[in-house]
Image (tube, rainbow, N blue to C red):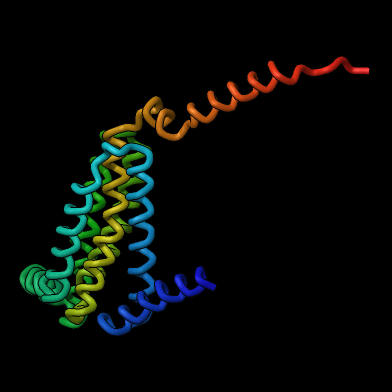
Length: 214
């Protein structure tokens, strides 16, 4: 029952905060789940390699999340796409102009980055694959950036970006730092317990020799 009470309190608090601050239980469920995953990843990384960077990825993800929150909360990307569309494609309908321009511009930029990265890493096949992935991902980002979010929803999206990037950056930091297998074995392999057990077995054998089998 105490375990149930703890689960009920944590889940209920996340849902209550999501409804109270961001106007939706869904935000509470999403952000609460992301927070739990991010903490679990950070704790796992510290267990694998205590010297792996954790604070740096946290700060970087927090800054990017804050930037996203400010941009979306103030509708700055939507205004930028609208102004760009007005100057380069005035025939587009004003209602859909920011969406079309955002999808095209961000999708093309991400596709180009994917093409360059794929060509540098794995040749033609990887370049084409990352080109398609970049185009799809960029189109989605461009579409989201063109939406006129309310301020509290913009903040919620910024928090979601922060909690999503924190474990990713932490994992990247662990990959760059590496894990010492010897240090990991020294921390988690029970050398003293095994040695003590062997000594105890030898002590018992000396004092209680096995009799001959009949």
